[in-house]
Length: 89
Image 1 (cartoon, rainbow, N blue to C red):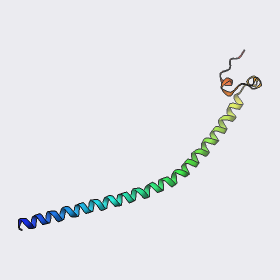
Image 2: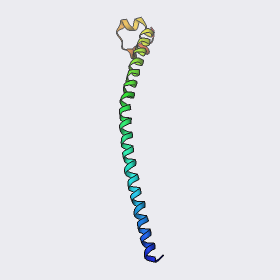
Image 3: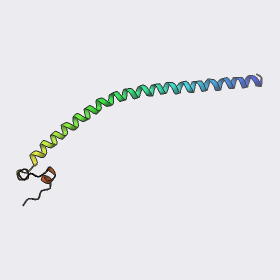
């Protein structure tokens, strides 16, 4: 093998490796884009689920606080924060 053939072989090898790297980068980018779309679609589903759970929990907490509220505090027209920290007289 002559030095020219070795140089040409190495140049071709470098070109092939470079093209493979660029192709892998493009394929990986396409994969990540598709993955991002799937996650965005699922995010809407989970957001609705969490919103529903939060609403249900807020209602349950409001019912529980209503059950704990002393009748005198309700009659005096205080706010929920004053009901919790009201000092009996």
